Image 1: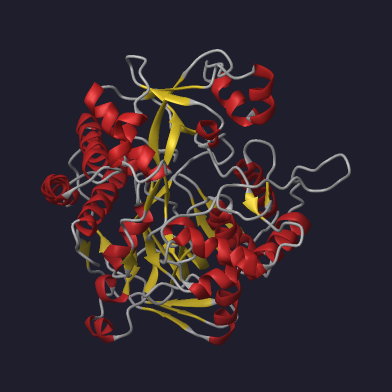
Image 2 (image 1 turned 60 degrees about the vertical axis):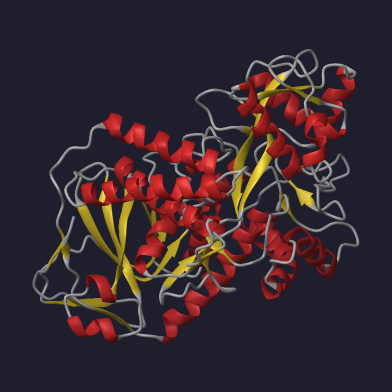
Length: 535
């Protein structure tokens, strides 16, 4: 795949939002104020913050049906504000969880603005009805790491409720356009995609994206004053994950290829116990089950944590995860078992209603039988480096949500905080973009036309390569890693990336192939960081 120069295309955007085009040599499918890549919570929240102020927004989605229920879990709740809860208390909880890696300015922004945006945006503007008591008081939960009850939710899947509310509001806006069945191929930058050679000396900037239309197979050129990446995390790069199939690192790879700075690629958070169901994303099972008396046993029915006591620094979640992985390898099994069935059934149902319902829906009754569990990649605390408005190191490129690294989480994320971070940064990003649209004129150079290959990619090769990526990341760059494992991962992933990169220049594009290309690229970067390399 390579760019082919065409006649000059000059697009000048005026401050009032209008534009004019000179000497068109490349078909421009769409021009917009803001291009948002991703339609999860971060993307939709950013779009709403812009759209309600009259900004023209285009939202790209890989899916062709945004209303189709997602199999994977979303956030269980979102941090709000507890009784007599102060921003300083919330900030201290974040710093304690971050283990010395938190960005203090980001922490202050989240703890100060978070409750405000939950009230103004989610409750007042969207009308989200969080769970309440009979007296009309919000039911606030105490999650691990929080010093007080401040997490609110809506049923068992808060994320689904928030996404539905945002989509409903955005569909009412004539200045919002959803472009479904679209996969971004590459971000457009002055240095890489302008036909004017002297643009390479200008400040590095993003001017839009090459986008694959999955329905027509055509490559579209989308130009934007500002581009926002909101593609989520990297969970699908690992064999076990609570994330969906599109958490394959697309946005991270796009930004890295465009020249944006990425950081903390080794900060992947793993859930200690998730329900193992073949062919489905792993469902999170709270670690509180172990604290309540659930025991972990191997395929022979033996409790095994005690055998690793000398290697474990207490029974922290990280230590238990390592013990589970080691035991799985020793027994050559794909999971271990968790058993809480000796407890009173009524107590289990009353104390852990969410876990009871989830497991029951998958065919397991935790009041009567043991359940198969495995650790799983859950949240990515690294990503594209951003400031307090989502601005990356590349001008006119923003990143919001899990794909961005604001430093608010540090080493790990507190429960209920990722969703709040997405909401806060979406709004600060939208406000900053709006201020810029009124102050600056936006220049676009001629954009090279992208040539496409004609070699079909065998689907079996995609499946095999994905298996290689996920097995390599899980076994060598996952919970248990050391120098020999990391060295092996770098060798395997480096070779695979070179092969995929060569095929990229010849292949017929598809969302599946682009996802593999991005996934291999991200995996290679993460393995390098694990080996000591810094981007």
